[in-house]
Length: 233
Image: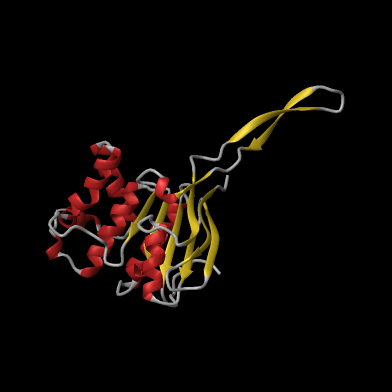
């Protein structure tokens, strides 16, 4: 069942008069194209809960929207049950518990004095106390989805950040967000710039596979892109 997960209601960025209202559903990956880097950065801050809206509101759905059974009367007075969707409950993003909205920065957003493995796994263990074996399986799965050659994985995960090329930093940042499995993922579209076409295609497929697991992805750009997702108008 498609579920509403995340929404902007009459949101206005600082120094902009345009209002944004949209809803993201489970299984969706959508593209929001803005007019400047400043507006993009402001919108990302609002989307991940790092800033509070001066106007409008950003909200996340509370829990899962489950179906409930309601008793109804038939034409002969008999009682029977009918499945109905439970009402959607929205809560302000700032009031949501940590881990529901993840994000991927343009350059990966990693911590410089940690190796790739530490950057990827420490937030996961800190917030969710995920099992080590489960974490390793998740990392292996997403590295394969992201297009990293299997024989290069061990060296990549053990690398200090100064030894990485820019595209590898981006891959590590995307990997970190994927293994945390937030309900909503926000991605800076610059992530896909200066990345080989084969890798970019793999990253697109990985984000779509992530969304297909009952989650949603919002990619935010400040200019036209060749990314395949439907734009939010």
